[in-house]
Amino acid sequence: MGRVSRFLIVPPWENGQEGDGENKILLDPGVVFGTSLHPTTRDCLGALVKTYENYRFHRVLDLGTGTGILAIGAALLGAERVLAVDNNPLAVRIALRNIRLNALEERVEVKEGLAEGFAEYNSDLLVANIHYDVIRKLIEGEGFLKKKCFILSGLMRSQARDIRFQLSRYPIEIVHEWNHDMIWHTILGKAKVF
Image (cartoon, rainbow, N blue to C red; front, side, top):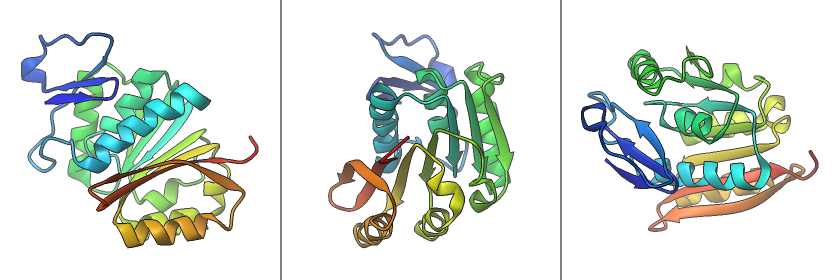
């Protein structure tokens, strides 16, 4: 499939491929998710690496997990516990399969449900590559402010501008932003004090 930051992503039928200093993710995208390398997914993987290098994380909440690629990436970087959540039962089954392919069942748990229902989960890092409306609801909740770091993605330009404005009301700092062709935006931020 490809290389993204420190990750080599390969389908299980090409498992012989070895990476040079990369974290290999075995990924079966299933029939719904294509290659799982949408620009927002790629940027989120890069944001995970940047977050881990600068702030470390032990517990991660991945909302809208899809194939589970970001949950797997977080675990491979060193997260001790990851909770991966998706509202789509097919996504949950695919994520579970991918977690098993990568032998991460002890560290990554997958649950079906609405993202907003899991915002209070105790985690250092919240990752949400998900619909704009869901992100808006998440950052308005108290659970969001308890996170040390966050990665918000899946945002179009005007949506990212609105989210930045909402975030400006909180004691947080935007650390880095990515955009793909000025269309898709990803925001990495952290609490000012943690």
